Image (tube, rainbow, N blue to C red; front, top):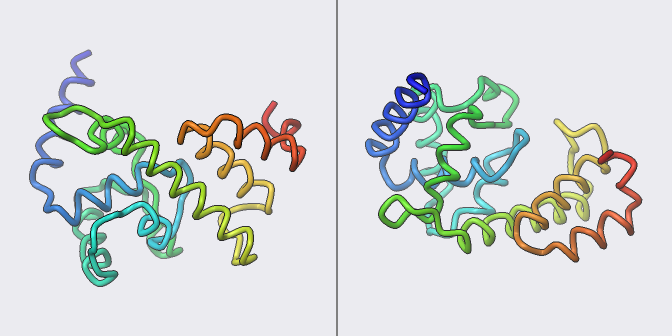
Length: 163
């Protein structure tokens, strides 16, 4: 319990010191459970921040060790404890998570994966199309689109990969 309290206080302190762009970047990356590019985070961010502003925010966040060390690959992933903390502050209004904003973010993430599949872009770090479909289904489910997630799993025969 003591470690959880120390971690929580540390993260609250770090989070409060972030500027609005940095907070948005952290929140956007917290939605994804796999390493993704900055473009994936941009799919979540609803504010009109420029790509340059987002690129400037990343090194500052990395200095706080909020991300796993994947930056040389062009893919980024938050440390698990940071992602969990950010999820609990999504759409933060007086330290309350806004479930609708989080669901909307997952919906945008599902759409991002759908666009990757349609455009047949580089699948790294994904092994194949199936990994992208699984992530898409996971985000649909978390967006409250259970039926669409089930339909995708059934249509693409993904159940065998989920068991």
